[in-house]
Length: 364
Ligand SMILES: [Zn+2]
Ligand SMILES: [Zn+2]
Image 1 (cartoon, rainbow, N blue to C red):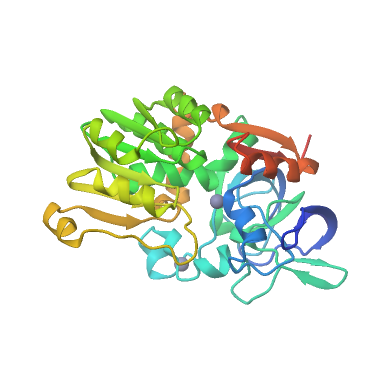
Image 2: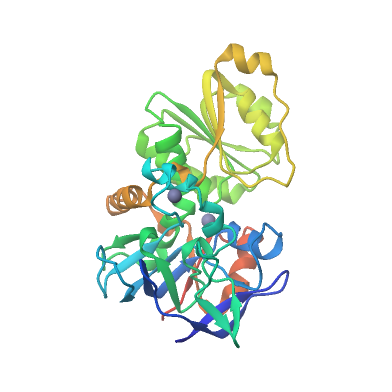
């Protein structure tokens, strides 16, 4: 079928064009996309050579309605509403351990953006386009998604607010709940207050953390962080970060999504004995840390990374929806919607920090 999709070419604006979409294969569904969030990973894939073959249809936070089922799909029905999360095979050891973010084939689906046989459901003028980004490619009117990625959504839930449960919000909340397993006695620092960091702050409030320290270089973000649950804020453009963290009495937990070595080192150095830091930000290629190894050993600290907050979307997204319904995940505070046609304005506003989570509406 002919669909409209935002085609990404290296370092050019997105262009909304007509492309051809194949029908769903076995274990796939066809989704009419209602809305899709823009995540930094989309823009990195387009402009920073992270390995996604271009031209491509990107977009990996899609929400929509199933309009056709491929062979063997029994968990879903036509007409059901779903959020499309990241790709995973469902069969490898990580998938079996309910840690699909570490799927053996994660790079195929989420970076190289192809099915396991290398094919793509999207083409244009007889030429294949990269079209299975995070198992969906949802910057489009319709998407072919792997059934494995899908989580059912109630019809009453607003599509634009649900999109980032697929990736950004899942990552931040998952890092706090699944990886750091924050508890009421914790003093947690959140470094970088975009969608992922603000989701971490909301999750830390749900966990009842005694102190939630938000760090960013933009005063507006810190105001939002306070409104969402931060008990203290540090504007690291205005003050020395290490000294500020020391004045605040240090941290038991830290979550970085800046990917900046100097920030991560300051966060690490502020940890109490047995403190834990988890990293979720994309760093510059080749970035490395300088840590005092004796201090690492003697203080019992730990440092680790996470993808998608170690979440299994099929269990974790319903939990996030419950938080939203209870008013504990006020996503309306971070989302700004744009018509699909304004994808370039939306991306520019995100990069300039004018909005936190831009979301494209495919249907009006
Ligand atoms: Zn797998
Ligand atoms: Zn993402």
